[in-house]
Amino acid sequence: EHTVMVGSRNAFKACLYIIFDAHADLRSKYQNNPYSHACASRRLLDESYVDPQQLYQIGIRALCPEEVKFIKENNIKQILAPKFTADTVRNVIKEINDIGSSYKGIYLSIDTDGFDPAFAPEKVRQFNIQQQGEIVIQKDSNSEHVFDLSEQSFTNALISVARKQHDWIIFISGHGERSIDDNSDFGLSTWHKNLQSKGFKIRSQNLIDSPQIPINTKLLVIASPEKPWLAGEINIIKQYLQNGGNILWLNDPSSSAFLRPLAEQLGIEFIPGTVLDPNAKMLGLDDPRFVLITDYANHPVGLAVKSVTLLAEGSAIQQLNETSKDEWHYTNLLNSQPDAWVESHRTDESTAKTQTFNEGKDVHGPVSLGMLIERAKPENTDKFQRIAVIGDADFVANSYVGNVANLDLGMALINWLAEDDTFLSIPVKTSIGTQLTLSNTQSLIIGFGFLFVLPGVLLLIGFLLWWRRRRR
Image 1: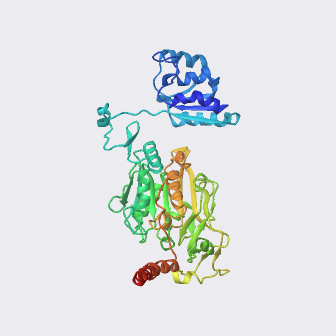
Image 2: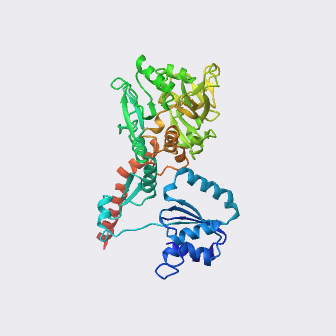
Image 3: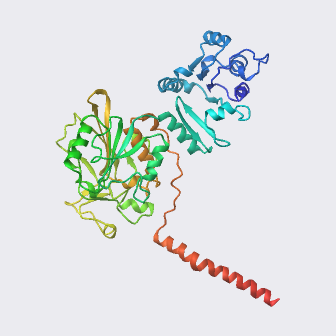
């Protein structure tokens, strides 16, 4: 309620006031009441001795002549609703950051209007309201319905409405790639649902059935193929790359050889073998094929990941020596721990625990398991083509995407590759990381306890009660 701002001045000295409202509320009186809601900002300036330069009004769409005159005379800072764009908001944020140190804080006021369905049935029909408490978030012709007031639902709806676009993210299929519709442990359905909740349009495409990549493709995703590609399919991807298309390539050690021509065009290669990391024990994992990533590049994607990520059976990536650095710019996004290494011998769950570093055959860490590659786009040198190559596809699979910061990394990669840099700094709101992972010993203790110990205790208690009553 805006009218409390006048009193707030006595409690919060020397603040900046940022007001989101459709109305300026700068009238001297409204219906003969100087303390009406329509006069709140005016009273703040007139009676609380707030300097007009401390006031920012955003989203104004309705003004009366008196307010227009007052705004001009006092140079009130406003962003009118028709001029409410990302650029104008960024300019205000920059200005506030520049002068904010001169003030003790920021007083933020957001005005919301409520409609009683009993008195506004046309609004119920207009917004297709289905249930009590439903919220509709709308921007232009885009809208999302929120059925609960959780932070996750509300944040996702805001992002989805802000992002809605006509471009697609295409997941290549037909070679045993991870599927966005697969609900198994190694499928990508959970990640897919999270991307959709953020407003991304996603579908799969088999290059044999549809050899033409749509012109409105924002990003192509290759998620660890298990079968060789035909030469014609590889040429389609190479041409897409040559035309400036963005790609996310998730590669497991077993699939490194299938797209070698693409790797050569990007100027990279996968080091043969599997990365082993003895530090996995820090998370209670006995399998060193799990690689802990705590070292991220000083890059918007790396800065968006605030915690550890966990890769499983990762492959290391390195730049080809003969690649011209004038064309591509390389950033090692994900770096292993220094004591990790690339094990050249074939490794599975049973042999990984006994492997040790072999000088001359293995490659010692730190090694890169994720690389970002950029170059100026052929048709527009002001924009950059973006490629991300990650030496693991498991980190976004259903079994692992909820672990540590794996989902944060997956979302940050998509935001960056889709050129939605504005959303990189928005933390992921999700509740998928609620599963409990137990060791074999812990599972045995719990299972034995529920099957034998707990029933035994209950039987003992029952016997003691029976025995005591019998003695009476």
